[in-house]
Length: 115
Image (cartoon, rainbow, N blue to C red; front, side):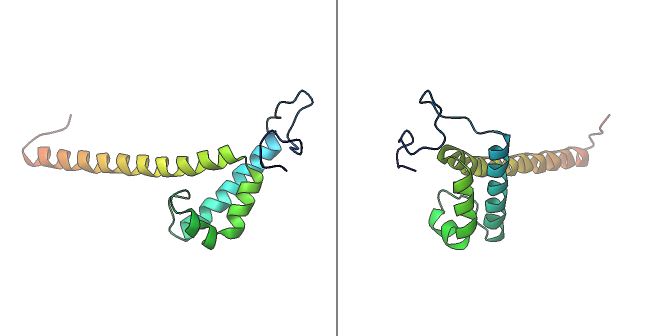
């Protein structure tokens, strides 16, 4: 495969010159590779596969290679960014829940009764 996405060696090229969209099997293989790679990151306490790329490649060399082989570069980047975004979203939601619970406790201690 050439280094340019439109090179003549590209196996995902349609007869009209466009790229062939991944089918269900290749998407499933990509997602499986992503899940295996992310499990390795979790085992090694690595959240951001982009920022900590060097460490991720050292500790999860096999998994990252399989993930990158199964998915397009844009999908790899998207999934790595999405992992961090979802982690931050979940932490924010948890923080808000805790703040709300504390506020309810304060109100109850001041005599507030829920209906």
